[in-house]
Image 1 (spheres, rainbow, N blue to C red):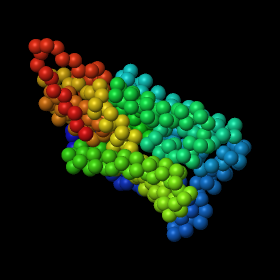
Image 2: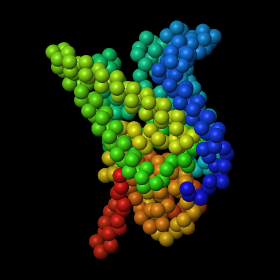
Image 3: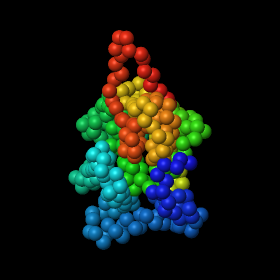
Amino acid sequence: MQAGLMNTYQHSVSSRAWIAWALSALLFAAYILLYFGPLPALGLRFDLLQRLAEAAGTALGLPAFLHSKWLLYGTAYTLAMIAGGAFVLRRHGNSRYQRVRTITVVSVQVLLAFMLPIVLQVFGRKEYYFSYFWPLKIEYFYPSVILEQPFLMVFWSFAGSLVAFPLLAYFLGKRFYCSWICGCGGLANTIGEPFRHLSSKSSRAWSIEKLSIHTVLFVALVATAIVWINWAVGRNHPDFARFAFQVQDWYGFAIGAMFAGVLGVGLYPLMGTRVWCRFGCPMAALLGLVQKLGRFRITVKKDMCISCGNCSTYCEMGIDVRQYAMANQSFTRASCVGCGLCAHVCPRGVLKLENKPIRWKAGQPIRVYAVDL
């Protein structure tokens, strides 16, 4: 474990003490109830969260179609991000980058992922989350979903996923989405701030990460292709249609519910806040591949690192930044989400996030930049 600024994380809830395990168990239970509702094996024969949502909706005088546990969850999620954002601003608000980034990601959650979907329902339209895109929101590329949405929403989804986001990742790095827009990353960088140091920096964790996240990306691509093939030929091949629906159900359960939700948030107090983003998110994997070939990099000032370890300690993605700094090696890592905390906590200003292309001049030695998965 890095020494770094660990004295700021001595509270029992952020040091894997018993209270952290209890909090993790509570998060696991909440997400299991959210996704799976009644659990007769545990004596729960009704949907506890749905009952709470109905009671809250009735008490507040909300229309019946808003008496949903998903609205209750969205409200709790958004409030958690707002509270966590205030905590981050208090801790790191002396950095302009951190102020703008935190305010932006919280605002996107409040406006595009919470309020706008509710407005759509109020006007009789199906809810739509404008801050989530394929392959993270894999169903937005399913024909059944596309056909029931207005053209502008379909255009927004396809243009973002296939055109705008790859271009932005090339020029700005994946940070434009993972740290400035995405609600998953937003929760991690706000209410999850006290747990960012728990991410493993070991080479074994890095190996597992590369295998895991690219496997999920491959599965997402295959699942999307199967759904489209079923849409085209399923009427004439009922066996394949059944298989396609099983694939949809399996992906929603294993990846959407268990990995992204139960494990992704439930493990915050034990493994850090970016378990899903680091090991499972297909969007992060896709944007990371583009980032490798793009302009984003972390540059290192030569012979300035004093090996304090602050940068590695604060890296939520498990990157041993100190290793590169001590080697005077500027680098690009596909997993880096550009949160900027490594540069912010460096006492000597050794690190800098840049998007500039590398330009060579005649007669100058070539400077090598490390590019790693």
